[in-house]
Length: 424
Image (cartoon, rainbow, N blue to C red; front, side, top):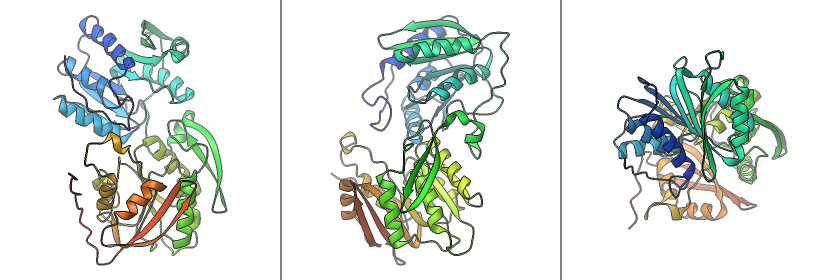
């Protein structure tokens, strides 16, 4: 069967379908040709990337129900895009590994296992995957050679039956299933409040740092960056916030886009202490659902009275509808963003990420509200040069290769979304 996939520089295997995925698909193809259980209908692609595995499997047999999941919202969008490109029907979600509907087991779980997910998370994957299978169901995974012994041992320790193992040039494929005598109480991972309390194996470290004189500690998780400290981008953003103060009237919500694992929103809570009375409504958005869960957890630890919600969003433009829905269509008093830009060389000619960001903000920000963005210094300079009418520059700070910039949306500014023109 022939397939076509659009790839992304921001996602795994941006130059082509990696050899591990190809090896797994060969093994799964033989399963469908030979001994795949009759009547099997439910398939989970765990850590789907751009959707290659789930799409190929969905096309291989009529009537399959395929759910794709990835911690990255951009991966979810690419999976849906590639499914439509190949005329394949499936579902895709931004969620942790092995999340999904409660008490709805799978006939087949597939995964090109993310090698850097963290040893405790990988251990849980083996035992939890067995508990999520229907009778006769199986799990097929591909791992790099360096993890082959680990998974072989974990499959044995979990009391599973190793049905087959195939070795490629740099990868191993394992197919395993639950033995009849295996008893497990594992259920699908449930995202949301209390995530780290329910799944402590995701906890990587307690990270400590000082931001603008305020010492902070956060609980950082596996599967997300920013676990060793606040970083220079957060430090320079906090310094600029301290200089200008965020727009907050004690009632309107704040948006922190790409909050990492929580250093910046936790510092912001400390900075806002003593501000006008009222409940603080904070929305956290970004690509990595695990980072958002960690940030949510850390903010709640510091102030459980704060009204917090998370919104998976690949960027502010693509997440606009969900971000407004999270506040009941109320605009934000401040948008504080740490945008993740893709390499310009990887994008179609004429793509202007900075212009798109500028055009996305007016429909999210209330009149008189503040936009604060932090980039690498070179990107910040280009962003500042593109400032459209309606925004008033409040200031900027540059430090250690990063630059934070702040703007106020004028009371007379248009707040409709303006699609940037394609550059010729």
